[in-house]
Length: 180
Image (cartoon, rainbow, N blue to C red; front, side, top):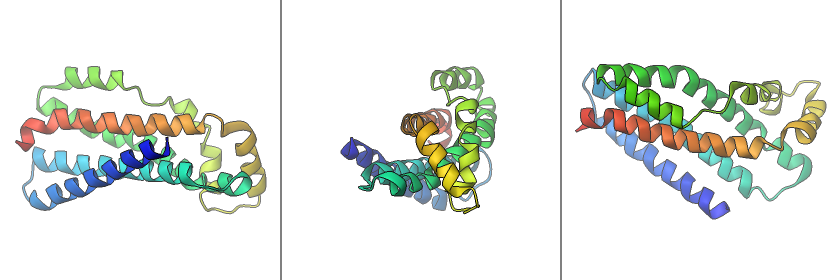
């Protein structure tokens, strides 16, 4: 599994570099620039999710140390979900409308269901404390996460990585004609 995740992470890094190169070439306003900007942000988020997931599965520690390493990925998962649910999808829909592809986009987005907000919201109580805001309740929150909520966490991260991959493919299909 580590090798597969490593490959996905490396591909996400290559994509991010390619999109950055595209961004540097595009100096026009309009749909192409909007598409490239959206693709860049989605590539950043995808790369961060992949990187943190790879670091997590590669982490040789156990127990408290392993649990503490989850803090930053909880933050990334939470914020990525928020971005896709809000800004990302909103801007993708705007691009699709301009191209007359809104119906196709809605169908494709429904096929790659985003993790339910209720599943992500359960991590909200841990998001700040375990990602570096060392409050007085840190030990209790760490223990609570380890015993109550970490079980589904790995599958939620994997689901979000897959979602971000598929979302980028959909974005490419919406923007392909503009870039060509």
